[in-house]
Amino acid sequence: MIFFFGETPDGWGIPGIHGMLAEDELDGYVQGAVYLIRGDGENLLIDSGNWSLPEFNNGMGEFLIKLLDKEKNKLKYIFLTHFHYDHVGNADALKKRYGAEILCHPLDRPIIEDPLIVTRRENVTRFGLSPEELLADFNLEAGESLGLSDPEIIRRYWDFPVQVDRTVEDGDLLEVGGLELQTVHLPGHAPGQIGLWNPKTSTLYSADLLHYPTPLGPYPIGDAKAHSRSIQRSLELAPEFLLEGHGLSAYSKASSRRRLVHMQIQQQDTRNRILFVLRRFDRPSTILELLPEVLPIKTDLDYPVSTGIGEARAYAKACIQCHLVWLVEDGLVQRVKEDGKIAFLAKR
Ligand SMILES: [Zn+2]
Image 1: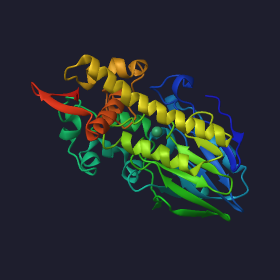
Image 2: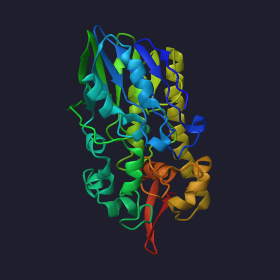
Image 3: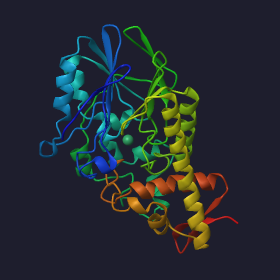
């Protein structure tokens, strides 16, 4: 894979390749963006790229080391925006090489430190649900994937163990060589997704806030309503520079705003499309029945691995379920049980 990096107002960034630009969504070539922020004598790295087994090695680890070796400043922090494998690879190797502290949000810490947690009940029960309850909306039995996954898939995609040094929460300030950087909790895409705000350059590092479709994991691991609030929160910061976890980012106030509003509308569209299809069907419908009409382009690209979900390709289904949970909460859709199956019905 060919990598390139570009100057940013704070240092440099490597754009994260995803979607149509990735050679194959289902192998190790999906890549999260990596950014460096330079302070006076100290640097902070945002995310650490993808890691993969030698047979899928895309070279990101080597590329990062080549760039970081040239830096005169000490690497103080590695700020992990969320637990997804394309953002946390190489973290342990970089920590050891440069002596940096690894930071993340407390909700994503358990998965970053031990991604095999997604094969155990506690990854669901820690959010207040049982795996059975989580799987019910998808009409799956316990052990039939979604949240309780195949360890082989986790071993192939995730780089671990990673020892997190410290957790950070919304509003926490990080001092990096005279800069004051603010942690912004942006849940939805992942429960512990965090962005970083540099008020000095009006730059928001927004992680995967602008990745569509989202959420990728079933509720409560993914949360469409929380995601909507996270977009609103970012709009209120009114960043001049919006540096994304995937894609080529925005370099003016107008462009940053346009991208955030666009994402807000896309999410609203997903919600409206579900309601529209449900009203047209005019009968209780399962997530599988809704899938081809709500997210038609994603049926072939449905991921098996985003939350370590097992062999069932669950990404698009999880996105629809998260929006359904939100619609049920808003009283627009009803969850019904028919012949032992969970289906959804638009309220009149
Ligand atoms: Zn992600």
